[in-house]
Length: 405
Image 1: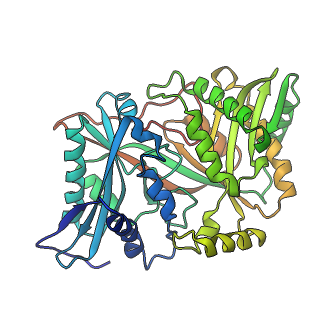
Image 2: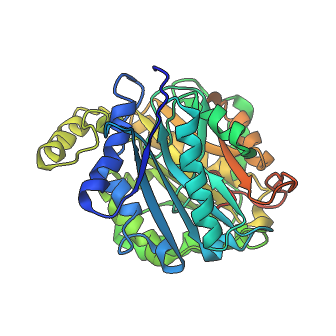
């Protein structure tokens, strides 16, 4: 990309529908020549900044800007946000910076970073993480620094030169996120299946896949496991049942009930795994626009079995069962599912943080191969403050998992 220097750049807050459209179009402009970039759905991005649809606004706020050059050309965008409950789980109240896009120009990037920092300081924040989402960390989280291939649904994709902007501005890596890929057509190690079969057959252990007809039960079971698994984590906040139901209804058109599993011991929920077909393999045709015609095209592509990859977004095991290998037994259930669905040939294990050694070990055990690396950066506002790193998890487990602002 050409280098630019602008005597005058204009940073404009997004306050109306016209500016919101420009915010969306910045990414289309900057990735126009990049065949690996898949445009997120406009409706998904706009929902994040809609207080009626995003519960994070209940205890926080967000702001967006677009950046133009002196001729009015779009050259960047960024958002800043905070959620009070999340922010104050850290030593320094921490907000977020996200949806950053920029031409290859240091002054332009720093101008946007400065505005995010200034705005967050006025809200009482003392640090900011980025690039992150104003929501849960299973989507739009971290800066892509390795593995510039087509992203799965909800995963960030970036230009390689963004890294220098963050690091030169003073952001430091708070944690690294590794996405591994699993070739389902390659047999798992025999030792893995022996362990999985042994655990699956132990008395008192049962396994069920999600059923929409009994969705309320499984939502309660998921919350029960999640809240126990994370209760002792320093940045824990309980899941919200309303948020889960909203996400479930949104995912209903692509949901495969047999890709979401729960483990029970004596009828008590002890573990879960949530996996979805990777709809980006269809959305790549739509350039972010899910209008009526593209909805019909979606049905056509799905009928053609265009989707061959699934993505595990989250796993959880309550602490007292984390050494039982329950997740291996869940993979045993999934093997039968994949045998019946030969169109699925790949699983994306996304993502596991470097603070989560137990889940990293599971990725290795099932034969996961490196796919991508993202970095979640943190910027401390106080000069001379000591950089930190996310606390290593010892007794909790969650696949996509992480401290969040």
